[in-house]
Length: 154
Image (cartoon, rainbow, N blue to C red; front, side, top):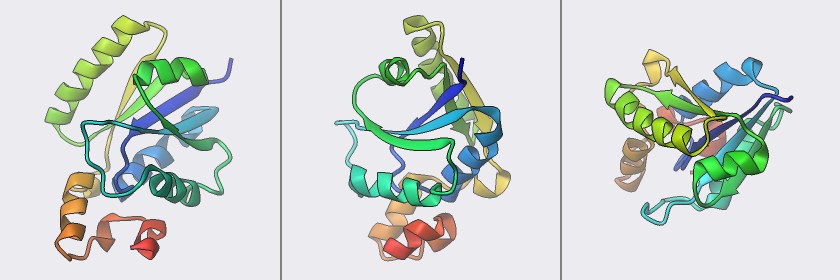
């Protein structure tokens, strides 16, 4: 059985912190699906298609990685793509508390799917999409937080 992992998120925009987490788990799985989840409660700055394009460009030379847009429960998307692992990046203790609650709910819905937490590199702990969006909206230079593929478009 292939080890398929889903890394879900909004990736609005994709940051170096996201890239760090993904890059560090490539050797652990046969396939990694970066899932751009649609959330009607969130107002995004960049279109789903733009975020998908950026991720595809960043990982164009990595055959284990695919990018998909999905709606609904993450656990249902796992079943659809055959993923038995969900990857979540952790920057702070507060991230863990929030993510553990979601992982517990997912486990209750489907015990065959495990959530794996990976702590971010210390140099990326301050990199959050929310902060990056705020910098961009206010005319600041967010380039030090973003992959080159994103910087080129901005």
